[in-house]
Structure formats: C-alpha cells, structure tokens
Amino acid sequence: MISTWAARPRKVCNKAAGSALLRDEPLVARILEAVVKAVDIPVTLKIRTGWCAESNNGLTIARLAEASGIQALAVHGRHRQQRYNGQAEYDTIAEIKSRLSIPVFANGDIDSPQKAHDVLRYTQADAVMIGRAAQGNPWIFQQISHYLEHGHELAPPALSERGHVLSEHLGALHEFYGATMGPRIARKHLGWYLDTDKRFDAAQIRELKRQFNALTSPSAQLEWIHKAMADDANERLFAKGSHAA
Image (cartoon, rainbow, N blue to C red; front, side, top):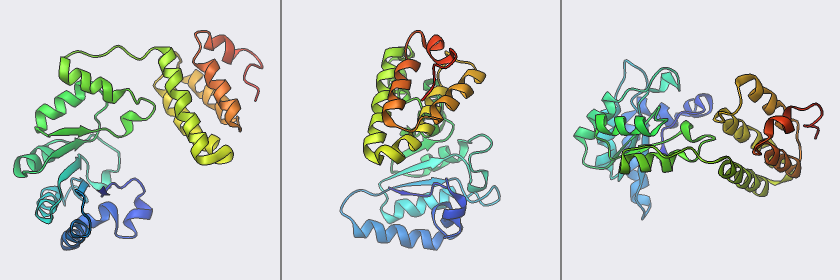
C-alpha cells in the first residue's frame, strides 16, 4: 500500500515523501500512475486531508488517485500540520466519498464500536481504518464488527484471554527480533496493553511499566506477564521484592 501517513515528519517530509507530496499534485499523479502500471495487483492509497488548513486539497488528490487507477482510498481526517493533535474531522472524508466511485475508508480517532458506527453513518464510507486505538487492544476489530452486525457491544475479553494474547504477542516479538532487541521492542507494546487495563490506576501503571522495562530477557518478561495477568496480580507485583528481574 502506498501511504501518505506522516508519522515521522522529519524523515518523511524532508525527503518530499509521505504527506509532503500533498503540496505537489502533478508529482502525486505521476507517481501513482507509474506504480499502478508497474504491478499486477490492486494498488491502494492512504492520504490526509491536505498539507495544512489553508491547503485542504484532499478531494483533488483523491480524484487524481482514482484517475490513476488506485483501487481504494483511505483518508485520515487531519491535515499534515496537525500530526495527531486536535480532533479528526470527517466532512472532507464525506465529500471525497460522495465524489468518488472507488471504495473510501475513513480513518482518524475511531476508538470504539460506537464511534465506528457514527463515522460510517456520517461519512457513508465503505469501511473504517483503525490505527492507534488497536495498540494494546487488538480486540477492537472484533468488537466493531460485532457492534455493526448486531447493534450491541461485546463483553470485554476475560483476563485469561488478555494474558494469552499478550504472551503470544510478546513471544512473537522475541522470536522475530531476537533475545536482545525483542525484549526492548516488547516494552512499548506491553505499555499499550497496560494503558487499556482497567484493573490498575495511573500510578500503578507507571510502576508496572518501570518493573517491566527493567527486564532484559524474554523468559523474565514472559514470567512477569504471567504474574500480571493473574487474579492476584496486585499481591504478586506490588509486594516488596516481587518484581526483581
């Protein structure tokens, strides 16, 4: 997928890549046409609504994309200068959807089944794209699908399921990145899971992150997760000396 996502503005925009391309519409058209012609598979595109509030050219870029042969378009409801600040707006997405014949996916601040439902209804988009809301909460996709189909929310995952998924996730990170980098990369993922864990308050979450970040081996991290996902996690992890690596 070609993406104009600007997660790393210095690295991306200084090279006239990603969302920086929104300032050069003819170049966007040439790149899209070249990519579509070069491959035998469907090409999709993700854009923002524009470079800045004064240059909200998302509709123009969307039309160029469709004309170039792009098969589906995802639109993040912020311009590049917003980065991830402020609130996403969906008027531009709705306008783009109304003017294009290819599928359009709405993206930005969709963090619950109800929000997904409301955004789909407002924009008439063909689907939603979930980003940061899935960090530490991979169940959100199933929850949204269930809500859209049945009109009511699923119960939160059981503690045992959270523990199983988290262990598998971090185990896969360890296997893929190795015994040194794997535990380092696992830290941010564990932090996201903790941020969605309603059993702990903010101070406890900070302490748990401190504990986990001190662990340097895959086995120590997996053992810590076993304790954290137990019914008696408070006794296991907040007792003096219980978190020694």
